[in-house]
Image 1 (tube, rainbow, N blue to C red):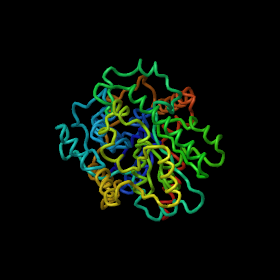
Image 2 (cartoon, rainbow, N blue to C red):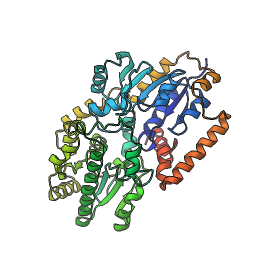
Image 3 (spheres, rainbow, N blue to C red):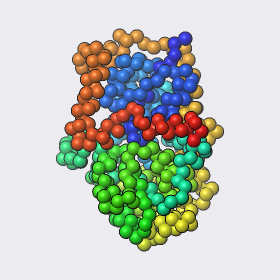
Image 4 (cartoon, rainbow, N blue to C red):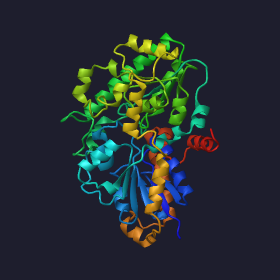
Length: 447
């Protein structure tokens, strides 16, 4: 019997690649052949690999819909944004500028939580057989107690981990060019976290408010204590934007763009964020999580964004939210002394939240559940011949696939070079990462 071939779509390596590699290993253990593609080379990879199945990270990948005419399509969400109805529907049904009118071509969506299944069923587009709650594959790493113990910080100065997103102010593809952004923006583009009738400029306002308050808070912490800072840029941001902090506070600040998230979180004593879901993984590990959201004028903030869609009515309430800089520094001082609880809520409430959002801990690793299901769906499957793929996925030029793959690679190099942020952009597109391979190696060796 032919070994099933599975192509995994890496939409954003900085955010998704760890979960993708965990799933890939689970599929390989079941006898599948696998490969990973990115948005730049997906079409050529499909033609070269001719998979029995494509695993997409979102429901609105156009290439996934095209591929569904030739192979099965599964959606394993890599999205790390706020776990709210508005954002989750955009992951599985399309962004504001392209909503799916049919999902019959999707074999299965693997979901992090029961509430997401309920939201998708409410649309009347999905049927129950297309949806399966398995949890978040990226969190599987935290099931390995020996690995987490080996990664965990032991002694030394208090270390504050900083993780937040202000991506419209700093992007991996170079400095924002707002005139071009507005020129190129699709006419139907909307943003699910904004208030009704509001638009991209409200997202920009939010990001500038986050950035200003975070930089002010970091300065106050660094000037008022002898603590260290590890800063993790968001998956869409250029690490160069924060390099000045390393120069201003030599030996005390490290910008960590390529460290895996589990290593980052295990290596710090507390987490400072705004309302990033990195904080949820911090809570999972028992780290105190402090948010600067309370330092932003809430009334003004909620004129721009929806508190419900942004998670303020759900998970953000579980972070400590000081209302002043003095209170913030006081909380960080308590964290440094080991006297601050992980959450502003009770431990049992945190456990309930993680179960609600991520089906955590569940009875089995999410990757194992997904791999079992995909393997069952592909049992006895036969790949379509190359000519069928060439008809359905036509390249712009009739080139040999080896030459087409080379040209795609050269184009990727050119795009990243022109961005002025070669390393950051390349890290976004990469389909292999030494840091992840090292972490997985430690995992297989028992920590």
